Structures are given as structure tokens and as C-alpha cells.
Amino acid sequence: MKPEEEPHVTKYQTYVLVWVGLVILTGTTFSVAGMELGGWTVLIALAIAGTKSGLVLNYFMHLRSERLLIFKVIIPLVMAVFLVFILLTFSDLAFRGGAR
Amino acid sequence: MALMILRSLKIMDEAREAVFEEAGDYTGAKLAMWLFILSELLLFGGMFILYSGYRYKNPVDFHHASRELEVILGTLNTIILLTSSLSVAASIAAIQKGQRKLSMVLLMATLALGLLFLANKGFEWGAKIEHGIYPNSPTLLARSKGEILFFGLYYVMTGLHGLHVLVGVCVFSVMLILIAKGTLNQRRFVPLENAGLYWHLVDIIWIFLYPLFYLIT
Image (cartoon, rainbow over all chains, first blue to last red; front, side, top):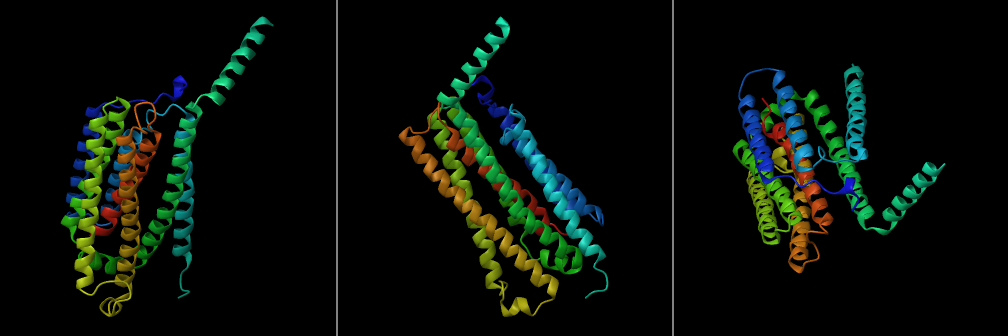
């Protein structure tokens, strides 16, 4: 293997710490759902889910220690495509108006 | 001039290395797995958009329908899947360090957790079906439009996710055999690493399914 391809071996302790973080965040989502926060509840739930995904992507899936640029570029690219679809869908829903 | 010749010689050397070493394989295999994962993200992403569109139109019905799901079971399954992600990540680290036995034990734990997730899911679906709530059932069709949509999405999305878990369990079984036979080892572990990447994707999808179906307030 070329030196830049040599996989980075993560320490077991790092994985366990990430797992503890993920479990704590799950507990947080669970307890936030019980509070009366109106429209904020969905946003908080999605923000926590996003944070958890970030932890999984960066540590479990090694995106953080990946040295080739392409691995770091493709995820934001797909997220951007996904975002465009969300925006198109919701602008359609919002402006559909009286046509029932 | 001499420097230029030296540099071009070096470039040729590197090119030869890339062709003849199996190393080029390693990045290629992982990149292909990532491309597959991204296509999966868009597949599930489409369904998440469908979900948010219908929820936006039927907020009250979604709220009522969601309260009928077993939150404790959903939370338990979240913890199970997170733990299985930990065990597979550790299993890959173990094989990279040459700890073959440990790698196999951790992979077996991952397999067991995957099966436990499916058992819980089956239990949950079974209880719902027993109450007459399944796609196109008379009990469900008698309900409001939003609740029918919610349960339709619930069955399709958790069903497709469950199918992915089942595939993962099968893939891990094959990996376990390959490690036992020595086909996968400290030098060659990219199939196991890719299986792990797939499993983490399944985990990430569940991370979003969990609050969207079980925790609507």
C-alpha cells in the first residue's frame, strides 16, 4: 500500500467514547421529546440526529482520518443534492394553495 | 534539466507502483462502497421527503398515530444498533492489529445484536398487526387519512430498513466464515471494512427513523 492509503487504526477507547456520546445523545432526544417546546421539538430532534450521524461518519466510518480528498467531497455533494430536492418539494407544497 | 528528468522518473515509478501493487485496489474498493452508500442515502432520502411532506400536511394525525408506537421498544432498538456499530468498528480495528480471535468474537456480537434488533422489530410489527393495523387492513382504512399515511410510511420505511439489517446479518455471517478460513486477515480486510461501512449506514438511517416515528409530540 502507498503511505497515504495506509488505513488509520483507531484506538478502542476512542470507539467506546464515541459510543457513550451516541447513547447520551439518544437519551437527550428521548427526554427532549417529552417537553412542550412546540415547533422546536422537531428541529432539536433533527439537530441531535445530525450530530449523531456526524459522530458515526467521522469516527466509525473514518471520514475524519481519510487522507484522500474525494472521500470528504462526495458526502457534502450528495447532501447538497438532497437539500435541493427538499427545497423543491416544500416550495411546491407551500405554493400549491387552493388547488385541492 | 536533470531535475526534470529525475522528477519524471519518479512519476513513472509511482505509476508503476499504482498498477502493480494491490494497493490501488484498496482505495477503489472503498470508493465503490461509498458510492453505493450515497445511492442508498438518496433512496432513503426520497422517503424522508415523502414523510416530511405528508407530516407537514397532517400534523395532528401524525401525532396521534405516533403515540401508538412502543417508544421503549424503539429506544431499546436504537441502543442495540448503536452498540452493534461499536462492535463492528472494534472488530475491524482488531483484524487490522492481527487479533483474529477478538475480531471474530466482536463480529459474532454484532451478528447477535442485529438479530436481536430484528426480533424486537418483529415483535413490534406482530403486536400492531394483531391490533388490525397493517397496510390496507379494514381497521386502518376506517381511520383518518393522515393516520393511514403515517402507518403506510411506518411499514415501508422500517420494513426497508429491516431488510437492510437482514442483508447486513447475512453479509457478516459470510465475513465470519472468511475470517475463520483466513481469507480475511491483517493484510487483506477491505471486505470486512466495507461491510462495516454498510452497517454504519444502516445505523445512521435508524438514527433518523427513531425520532421521526417514535417521538412526535
